Image (cartoon, rainbow, N blue to C red):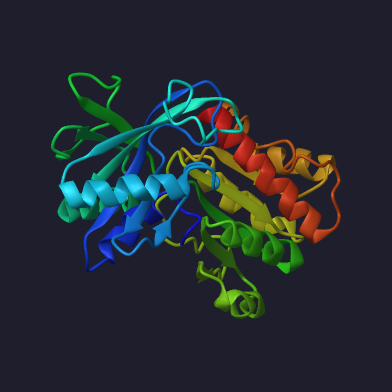
Length: 306
């Protein structure tokens, strides 16, 4: 999917002819994208991703073609410090972009496989010959003509519940390009969302939780009107290292939930991880507004956490 940060890698793997991977390797001042952000060009000029929201992509394609013709990496500089005066970055910053011709597809496959398996990785690229190496996350900047950066698994959502709120949130998160796993005792709801690009699981009971990978890049949100479903499910979720765990409900419902979880053996530390409310808009009662509010809340938490 285009909205994925790593879709340029998939794009290159699907190309038969030579292609180019473009990566921001340095940035000065404000900027639209972070260091390590990527886009890709096919040999025919097709594009996947964006590094400036359209300000420099046409010129970057020229550099990409040249890198393919010469068979060597090329570094282009834009904005602050650049000699290209007719191309300005509206944000006022500057950045250097590496055009890497014919990146090693075996290495790209390994990168994607590790990210799919929810493993953070470090990537090193030789700016002279384009050699790519993979390691554990790297805590050092570019040195000795080697560009180092880290790639982390993208945020994934585990959504549990019934009704319009569950449907609206799953639809919104999926449309935004996130991986969504929907768990519900409502077979009609699962059937309704079957057209969505998300994995659906039927919950026959509150104890029938499927085996899912839950890591520190996972957000868990519950939308149950029957709150009896929540304690057994949340008891297990609070024992995970998900960075966001929350359930729809009023203040009194939240208080009752905490009491039930404490009776079930949840520790104070675990209980402190349960959000007091979900969403940035208090008491949102429209399913679509609630979905937007909760998604914004999760993203805000992810940015502050990572």
